[in-house]
Length: 337
View (cartoon, one colour):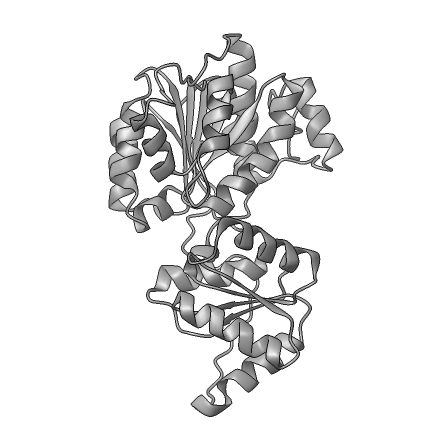
């Protein structure tokens, strides 16, 4: 019999928020990590995307800050969540904000690709929790808009993806700027060498909870290989996309994603693209169109294979083969979770 959130020690204002969101039963990673995280232990949580990690760290982050009762100072957040991509940072904040609000706390999101004005304003007014991508956060720290010496709890999400994107030196500098006695929660699907170094350097006597090692594709997924002549490729992809209500197609390059989305739309299959060349507004607009069903196909580069949560994806197509096996697992994991 699994325990309830109340059994795990979640404060009642947060139970109300969870209940309102229809979240009643903890997932295995939440059940495993919450008791330790809520008591202030450093936690190393391993579970794939979609295992419920976001609540597993947002709940204790908010609860610990509420319990400590300190006030936030201008430009000095008390809680910090680091995420590898803008989309993931936005999605984490959507989960976090109602929880923080219930405890009278404010959050803000910090990432590149947009002007820094709003982010600087929020920091100067004083926010309790910052959800940030490492690059822009370091920029703002360098400009003296943000300091981390008052940070009580730091969360690192998708640490393995941070490593893949080359962010670990920045993450190391950021973590070094937080107090050494601060609580640290690190979540990762896999424990590669770079991630292990972070764990060994920054986590003190961490409790290790591995719910899923991320090495297998989640759930019962059918895998098919289709061999088509290059001239038939777009027609075959349009047929596949047109036969399902929600399909994600992966390409190797940004240019390839843009071109394929255009070709599919030209064949009557409403498609949008998602990649690093788009402005932040365009990324949000395209993701919203796919989430709402206005577009039935999302054509994406591998940056979208991580951290983007869209429910009820029926089919994932590798329009270009992935560069390495981990990318295949993360791409494929969009459907079965």
